[in-house]
Length: 115
Image (cartoon, rainbow, N blue to C red; front, top):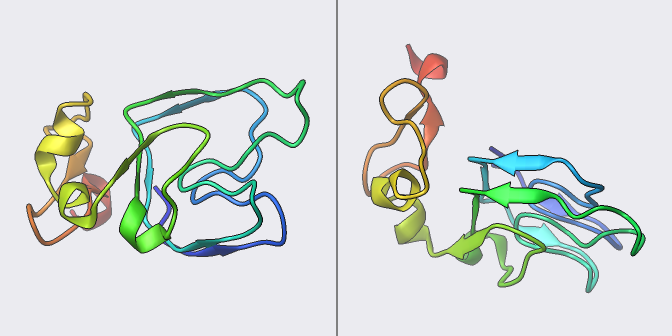
């Protein structure tokens, strides 16, 4: 997950600026994204049209805190939705072993970081 803001003159994304394939699964970003027209809430645009698109599943960005309504992948959600366990659980996030959340108060966080 990415909590910090991103500022760029061109490609910018809350998690990934310019993808070239790969897999993004069970990730999120909440920081402000400031960049050019190729910016996105979770993922910015591809640098070149021949760059492979990433496979994105179960990943989100906060449309309010990021200031972004578009992204190359992922799903935009409001801050309230981003602090709701159901948003993530419905996308297959593991809240038994990997993640934790204080409904209505926090974004998801890794369990091991606060044990």
